[in-house]
Length: 225
Image (cartoon, rainbow, N blue to C red; front, side, top):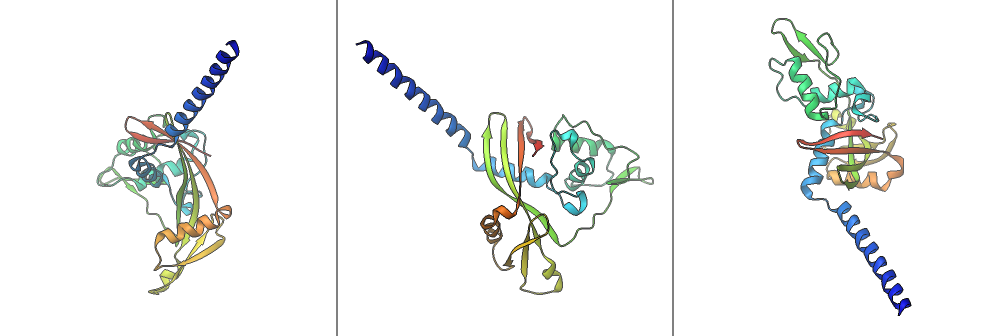
């Protein structure tokens, strides 16, 4: 009888362990389409161009360790209306994108991202010259966590140099962030074809992990590794 009770207890313990393990894994994997769309939209918001910021998405442990030029270029990219733009609006946009933990502020005497127009007493963006390489990414993995998401992205470049030659049909060169050509696709093919080519050669591309935190206003980036 005693052995039977012990056996039942062991089986019960195994059952409870499996139950909570399964439940925990299900909670990690439960992602809605709306969540995925919000994550992709947010990362697109903060993803820049390497010719401007040296790294489209730099690595950092906290937002205040991130390169300042990258932070304000992200802000500039996401301001919809530049009419009579004030320094307060610039800094407010920074907190909107990166959260209240952002301690950096754009200074009135800075002239590298925005410049003060003395006549209107408002800030105007400095124009950015871009090359024919489109810095982009696709989401490879998403892990749902209690307070946010852990997202792995794969970075790649789309080279549209042939498009500038005036051809109706041309090839888009797919490159890694070292600008090494990995593959080519025709411009008539769908964007999914590009992602397929990157996935087929994924070991040749750079990966980064982004820690996103859920807030009352949406999601913000905590760090990039």
